[in-house]
Length: 465
Ligand code: UDX
Ligand code: UDX
Image (cartoon, rainbow, N blue to C red; front, top):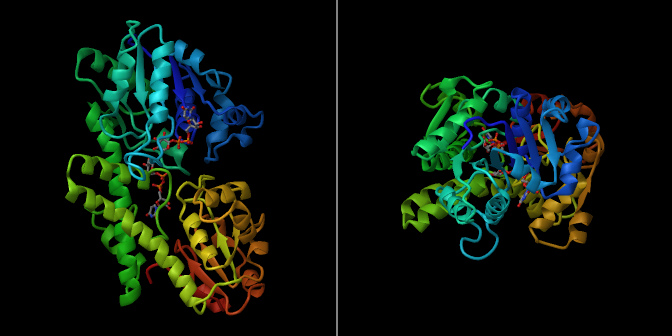
């Protein structure tokens, strides 16, 4: 095993692989980084001449790609060549929840991971470090090792777990200034050498005391645990938000009061219409599945409740809209401001907006949407994925706009579903003037100023007050 990493290959040019490799390339000019993907369209977009057209929107990312691309950062569809040349191969392919067979709806689908392992096994002619970057069920490294070691060509593989903790919308900052880097590896001398080689890559910009090394299983499980704890905080504050609405308490005040306790801390206490994103639900479902598979039903039920609460929060938001609009939204225009699962990203995976639109369309509402970064094509694909109705029916009931004022014109109600900063700065008087009266705002992110909106004439409802 080489003790120094000089060439990296990353399989998967998505939200994790793309930004992570761009930052490694920026911070390690002596390392050649090649990101490969099966999706030729995606690779072509990463190679767009104008770096504003790269496929993933993250503040600061296009500048980094512009500097490093062609120097020591490459995007390619030639997976085999990149594997062959690399000393370290990062696996960053997606691991969606299984939609078939055993564990359907809960377990992570590892077919792409296995395909990567088989491809690495087939191509590798010299010793390699294989790094799990994708979030995986605990003990996946064991399966990877078994596939890799059974190739019979005598190549030695070391498998490391190096989970990524970046959050979308702040990916570049999170990568440049991580709270910690976690690297899990075998306790054997070879495993420790591999860990050391990867530590040296990160040490180019991360302080040594922030680089934590563990055994492989602890590392794999820590990632699932971190996401479960974060999601649990949101479900906990969302549970309180309903109680606040009934008792006259205000969830923002409660969050502030408890967050000042240094044992609790202020982050991840924002009540919302429900968390989305590619990770929280998937990882908790995965944790629940693992617990069940070991017969630990109490543990499984405990974590499952975080998801149950999140679904309840989305449903409650819809029920409230319907009830407030005099128990019918049929043929009423309801405008969504925001479709992305959080601000500063064009990612919509598991976004609350998708489920809320689906439920309101079931109530025969006409949905209009404005999101600064999400395309109509993506919104329709998201709705279509739910298979509630035909593509044509979705397209008929979902109107999309390039401009928020047009989107809100003649609407009976506005629902704020993403916390984009620009929503706060709109001319709300102008929006009010063009709406049906009474004009309602349902603020699913608690970002607007209640007294200002009420002074204009809106009927304003926020989460948790
Ligand atoms: C991430 C993580 O890696 C995953 O663990 C996390 O839990 C969810 O999100 P992400 O980068 O967000 O994945 O996924 P995505 O944007 O879908 O990118 C994955 C890429 O891998 C896609 O571009 C896909 O084309 C590519 N891929 C997938 C391959 O190149 N080969 C495959 O065999 C499968
Ligand atoms: C998350 C983890 O934060 C990250 O460490 C991990 O690597 C991937 O999963 P991400 O899903 O990109 O990151 O974004 P995050 O900021 O965690 O937000 C997830 C969801 O929770 C969003 O829908 C967000 O709006 C919501 N949220 C977040 C709240 O509703 N309230 C909060 O206080 C914080």
